[in-house]
Length: 314
Image (cartoon, rainbow, N blue to C red; front, side, top):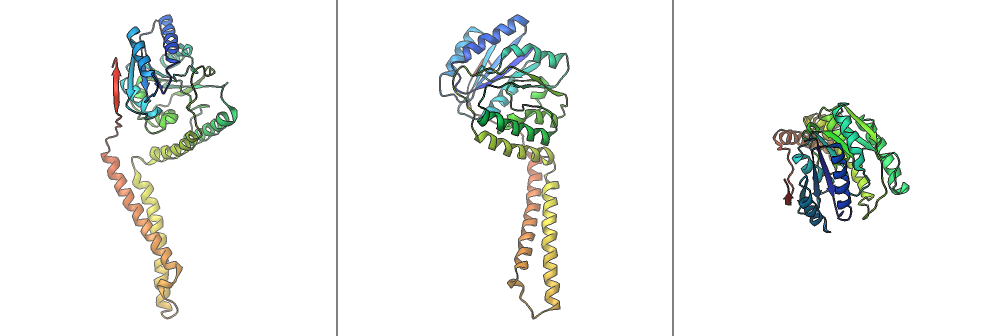
């Protein structure tokens, strides 16, 4: 199979028929063998009914319906898990991503031998204050932390070699950082392509300010997991040692001072005593956290499970 299109969606019933027809037109013009995997992330409108109707007219269309809303990362994870195409392309279902970009994206994967091609919406039709400016800040920080020179990490339009999507685990809100996950999985040939961003035609944006707060927290988490996931004791053990040695040093100072001046002060009346006690306890707790994290990391199954209500064509 040439292409798998993975399209997560939430309450996009109005746009799905037009999107499906547009995709079919592009695929027929280029004579691609393909599948379209719509992942309904707990929609409350009739999106799933529309997907089933589209499936009855086009056997290349398949669907996964979540029992409730799990988020975009969960939808992509399940779509990636079943995708069979040599090239896997993701796009949003709101018609703001153009299916006309598909042939060039596939060419960059197959002929130019890239592992991942990320879309860059250079000209956007979003509110500048509430989305564009925070997005630029978010992308700048991610570039600095990850070392990947992309302008738009959060663009939904991306193309992957099939091996890439089978080698990464997308969870939580990590869909924003798929290029980072791919790089840490050993896929270094990552680039971007300027793509068309179209005005929203149907429905309303699911964007909210909380996504940026969660995004930065996820970036910190991703940075920590990427560096210490297989060796958590290196982090917890280092800081545990530092705290323990500070506490031990203060405790030794207090003991020596007591021997030198036995009648001058009582140990428990000095703030230093409680500082030493606190740092010793924190140091030991960090050590224990490191040991537990080592056990967890060595025995973790590394698999997410989502309640799926229905599958069509899979």
